[in-house]
Amino acid sequence: MEGAERAVSKLDLPRKVTDFLTSSWGIVHLHPPQFEAMPSVLGGSNTLLAIPTASGKSLVAYIGILKRILVDDPGSKAVYIVPLKALASEKFDDLSELCGAVGLSVGLGIGDASAEAKKIEECDVLVCTSEKLDSLMRNRSELMANVSIVVADEFHLMNDATRGPTLEIN
Image 1: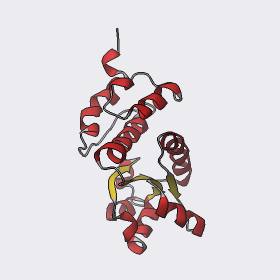
Image 2: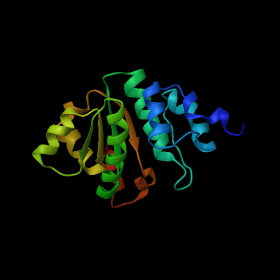
Image 3: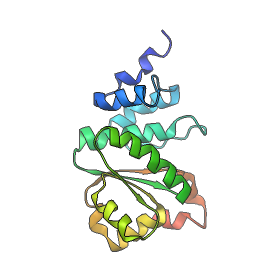
């Protein structure tokens, strides 16, 4: 059977995660590049994933986050850094659905509203722009004390002179 070894159900994740991925998102098997990244991601290693657009990088990141904060270091937090507010909102929606199904909360950091600040303090996973993370690290560094995993989406922007320096500082 083609792809059986790449079955989501075989991942070293809590069953509630794999059940959600298969039943709610219809993900039964990983694509080959996703599958190849799993030993590194699930093993907790630093991982740079450079695969084509729409090939599932976000799913790999989501799996890494859930493994880390549900299994490897329960009670810790995750930060998912994105370059644009629109992308932050998209990832926030995805992660809210996935994390909500397994009892975790997600916060969105793209502005400076006080309601947003409260959610940032209480969330398990924070999705934010690099500029917001920079601000949090400078002004609310205690919020980062329990972070055990950081995902930097669109990492190639480190080389963008208009955005890279803020991400580099973090």
